[in-house]
Image (tube, rainbow, N blue to C red; front, side):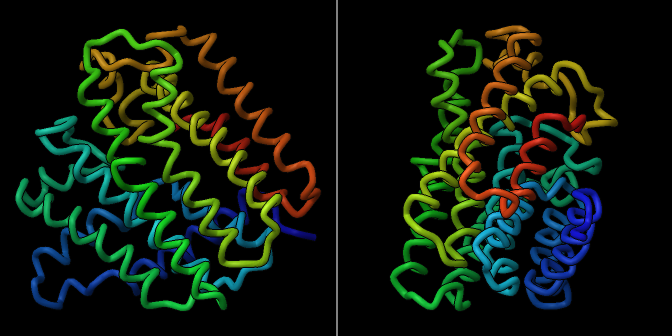
Length: 296
């Protein structure tokens, strides 16, 4: 009998932590200060939702676990770099991340900037130097997927939209557009990269992409609700930061109750995209449930 979701996720998180320890540069290697800061930013923290999505999508299509480790590490390094830069004084100016001082507080702004730069380039190095597919064209497509998801047409573009819209009232469509880029793009990339490590049809990939698109938005809606309701100790980051900084959120636009309804609607639509996969998509369904029901 397959393990329950809690056992599955804990086992994968523990194994993945070992993978990250091995793939990140040793703190004993020059430049030690930068490598130590890179490890600080990535290790021992976070929910690892994106790597778990890589593993779940990959297991669905029978992908080699060693390939999934690399894809998951690349996605997580992009995510960690984005958090380091997002927390800096020139952006969100936060002092707490994953229950510990943010990277720029611990190591200084200049080092934090270099940490983000280095994690981003390491992510692409990992995908480029490891065999993630028997089809070279597909592996190039995987590099393109991650590049678009993290660049101006993805996460970085969403962050730019976020910064220029502080204090502004956005429509629901405008807010969705911002978060499809800022939060959703990397979640979609996680699912797609996991699937691309295995065998799939184009129709299956389209369904997985729709699942990920819905859950990427749902993740942000729930984040906005938690930011308005949970405390700093629970979140591991400064609670109420968005409201204090006059950032447009789903809660500020819709209110908490309607934001919860939106998250459920997106969750239901995501699950509908998995019907054709049957029990094979169990882990993706469980991750979808976790994303909308989480308390942190």
